[in-house]
Amino acid sequence: MNYQSFKTKLDRLHQWPSLYMFKFIVPVRQQGEVFALFPKHELKTRASKNGNYVSVTAQAMMRSSDDVIKIYEEAHAIEGLLAL
Image 1 (cartoon, one colour):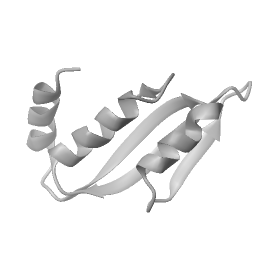
Image 2 (cartoon, rainbow, N blue to C red):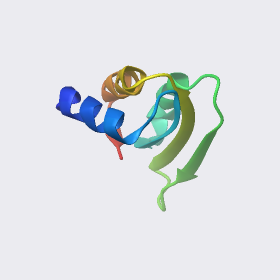
Image 3 (tube, rainbow, N blue to C red):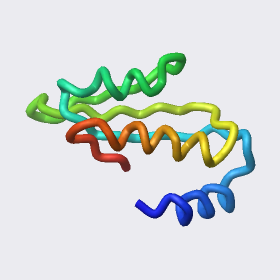
Image 4 (cartoon, one colour):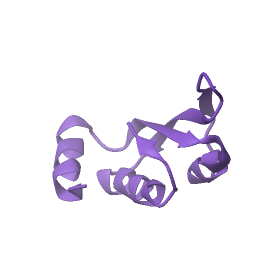
């Protein structure tokens, strides 16, 4: 992922601090790792039809585009995760 381009887009679209919505799809066995990215936030989850995957939505107040990118960098290390 080109983080510099993403940072530029984030800064153009948001005025920081800002509420930012993260959406991920992850294998059920990895959902705890996604939850750990947002320890102080309420997360919404929805299981896939067969129950193998779960979508996770988090809204978090971010201080800057760098904070958003840091979450995505940490999420990238989670096996099987798709960021939307």
